[in-house]
Image (cartoon, rainbow, N blue to C red; front, side, top):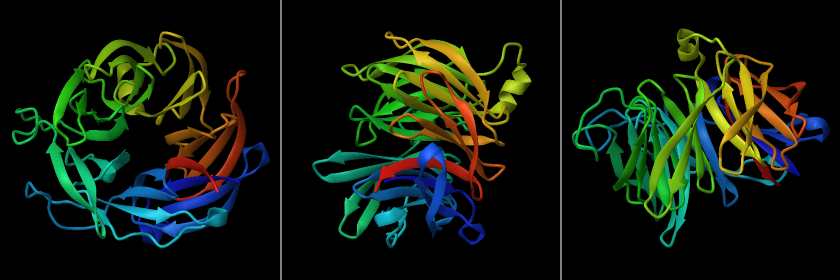
Length: 347
């Protein structure tokens, strides 16, 4: 059976946590189980568990003497969409943890987290009783890797790909590349005010969804030189949209299914689909409303038949049929507080 696991970003006492649903015929989600967690922000599934980064999970300070509130926990996945007992929280040493990814190594699974408000990327390595933060980099700070300070740094993603960690910095309009020890490798800058949020890859082709301009940027990835090169930009909004509207709209999430790339825009409540050309160029094929308010995340079932939109402000999840003919709205299929991330796994 295929299950959807949807994060609800509220405090635990207000319904925050992970909700599981069985994916039924026609894309309908049937509730299965729930586990309470404090303000979960992003998750990845690996080895029969969900690794979740949460805000407001711990107290204390980071290694630079600054306040910290975020941590990662692992929640085992049980039969029928059930959950096992969560692990203890492993501090990221950051504030507003908003992304987590992992790298399997000879020494075990290494976790990497992005912490938005503290502009911190952290590396959590396994130890006897869980994980401990072994390295952390403040983006743009004098004691970080770049030797310059920029208070606009806002780190949104810590994606693992090709043995590297890609740190997407919305405030400094950069995608920085690190090795597994968080030693700096290279950087790719975008036009000032672009606001990259997340990056996604297929082979040597990469694309960012950009929050401050509601656009998608295309890149080429040189895995030998470990360097990104910017190619061009594509619009997510209708022609004639003003710069003020673009800034307010906030491009949010980006996904690939087959030869189609999808991206959503929050204030505009829209999803745009592009055909991916053989050279990585994009051709816009559809613009459609998400059916809810403030789509924080979108994701597709592994077979590509259905696309789901997590509409954060409305507390809804809407579903579309997806395929060569484009997206077709089916309806509202789930209600939960502040949905912000959608994952799928067979169970």
